[in-house]
Image 1 (spheres, rainbow, N blue to C red):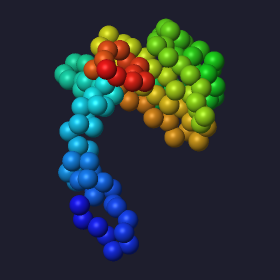
Image 2: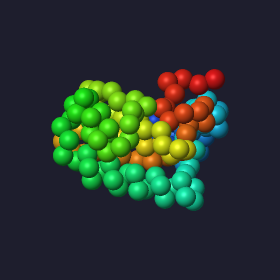
Image 3: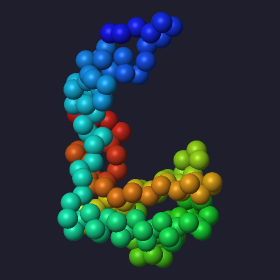
Length: 133
């Protein structure tokens, strides 16, 4: 492990100390966190995901950041019942399961919304597991 003059350990050095390299954590850490990885979308599923993300981004940008409002807007757009809609400290988080395509979004009062499509998690489902096996 390389020490800096200040005695502080940099992020890259910490990865090295954990047995990894400068690109990422050690293999053991990647294995232990595998349950948090979502499968990538491919082909038609990727295209469907992009369409859903575009549609939701456009239609949710003016929705008030309130759990009931977001849930109602998702229903009006034809998404039915979301897998999860919850208030967070800084906004509303939602998860939609759409025929092999998962769409996850967070709407914030600052309108720095993030909506993305991904495949199901390795443990199954569209909601990120709190813990794995």
